[in-house]
Every structure is written in C-alpha cells, then in structure tokens.
Length: 119
Image 1 (cartoon, rainbow, N blue to C red):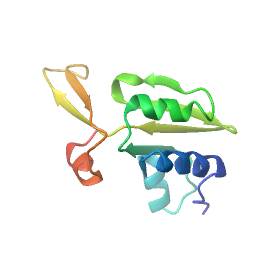
Image 2 (tube, one colour):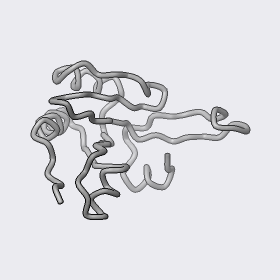
Image 3 (cartoon, rainbow, N blue to C red):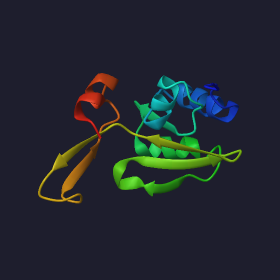
Image 4 (spheres, rainbow, N blue to C red):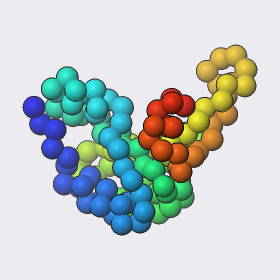
C-alpha cells in the first residue's frame, strides 16, 4: 500500500498552511487508505481560506481549473497528478431534483461542522 503524500501536494499544503489554511484529505482518498489501497483520488478540503485566496495560492503551482466554482472545487494538475481542492460548504435544497439547491461556501466551518452538513 502506498499512502505517501506526493511531494508536490506536500509543498502545496505547506503553502496553504503558511497562509492560514488547514487541509484535510477527503473523499475517495480516505476510502482508498482505509481499505489499504493505493490512494488514486486526491481530494483536499481547505479550511480558513476563501475560494479566491485558495485560487491565488494554487496559481503559484500551476493553472487551476475552476470547473467546480459554484461548488467551491478547484482542480490542479501537477506532475501528472490531479488534485481536487475544495472549500467546506453547506448545500440547501430549495426544490426537487439535483439542481434545485443553493451552495454556501463556508471556509470558517470546523471539520466536524462540515461533516454534519455533508456534501
């Protein structure tokens, strides 16, 4: 099992930490690690930084893909590895269907609060 954090990701996380951010591995990477598998899905939730500030910092390491801007998600490819960075959020259903909700980006949530709101 290889659960080592890629060097590029460690450098990015260090820069985010220096700017006041706090990072947690989330999503598929946590599942892979728990199952004893090699981590292939690098989802990093970033606390205490705004979406704009997160984007600015990630620009130091490549070209961020703002594909999930309305959901607070930024993709960044470094050394052939794709990382997904996200801001904690709260989804609020406002109607029926998969598009009938609002998303509030809340970077100041604690990890426990973010888990309670879910994604």
